[in-house]
Length: 95
Image (cartoon, rainbow, N blue to C red; front, side, top):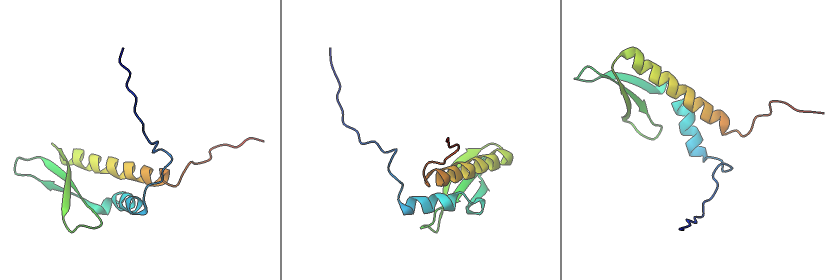
């Protein structure tokens, strides 16, 4: 029988860097996203990172509605990441 041993550092207690949190905040604003139409008729979602002057392609969708839904989902995703970076949220206390 073969056993596999490995050592791993738990990252769930590590807080993301301030640079990462700032990038998440930036990406959680819809104004930092756009939709472009490609020559093949598909729609491409793009975001602009803080430290870059160019747009980065993210996803491709068949419809503009699908592209906007993808952006809305990404904005929601990054908003949740920013909120989670603040640490655990107390939802109920007992006496």
